[in-house]
Image (tube, protein in one colour):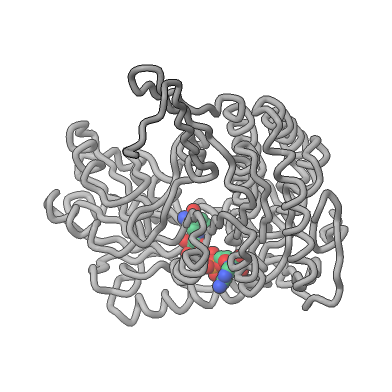
Length: 484
Ligand code: NAD
């Protein structure tokens, strides 16, 4: 497959190059080899994208929701038709196995375009009677120009999760992918325009943090939606606050997964695997603090180790591979350093723990047991395949410990006791919770974090509130009174 894109950026309905921007090499994580090079957006490119969005957005906002939605749904169908090629590209961009990308990435992007394409025609205001002949009606209006800034773990999905609701509500989008995975968003832009999206409404510009910052601080930008780490979130939120811009912040986490003694152990092990090792552990909502009731701890660890032995680690393009490399050498080194910290802090390594002796950025799925709450591997987001297993005996105690974190993205509970399941879910301080499951993210459900993990929600009807604003129109039919 050709991995070098036609050009670095997609602006005003066309691929655009400006080779004076600093080159960014795209590295295939399975080999460490350069597979493409893009150029960072220059100020001229950023200006071109903002100008294009400014020209296109007011016209787009005057279309009916049905007309806007039809284009998004057509793009969804085209993405599904091209799922194979898009999944291969996603694998080149991220290193995630094709076994995953073919069912989780372009497909979830298509789901978002279909969902928000469907909802576009239903966006309406309200009529609010005030007694007598007076009333207020509300209009749900777009925000204007939205900037999306992506992380590297789900480049196609993030490009669609931000683009679909923005466009459905009548906004224009300028999307800056992560510099680590710049390829997939260009395809999303290409397909949207092939599906009939007018030029200028979905633009992709490449670059690192400085390009993101240039977009966020531009006074013509109305909204910023970031998927990234908490430190970046702090900077972007502060910069957006300068201009009193709308924000959505999808940030990091260190989520708890609580497994009670009455849980179905095989299901709980599946939850722990999905919550720690899918995408080689590079998922924001991962349940990396696994609290296991002392009564079933050894049985749980035994089944977990046995099941991890079935992981097929290798060439991400091979259909049987179920565990791929880390996205970059830098991320690999972060993970290896945390494995070292876990050892040094006295946790018991029960599985994995080593880099693989092969090309690419591979590390084994790794599990530490006997982890205590104060250890770095139990407190800090690693964003890699390192599971920390902690013991507990008492429900109140485990809830307090699960919530004793600055993060609040997700949380999960495994138990057969229905009342306990709902009680625990209600007490979790997290935006996205799971009962006897982990890491599902259907477009129909709100997704996002509380505490330091974020502001706002993606997906579902909730996202509409974050890509539109309500105007109240007061209507007086009788005479207006005044004091003099
Ligand atoms: P990162 O914070 O390093 O970068 C995220 C994006 O922000 C990149 O595109 C980067 O170029 C850009 N950026 C950096 N500095 C900026 C600045 N000053 N102004 C504007 N943009 C700037 O994150 P990452 O390493 O790419 O991704 C991993 C992180 O993302 C993890 O913390 C993970 O939990 C989080 N994440 C969260 C979600 C979620 O939905 N909550 C999803 C995926 C990843």
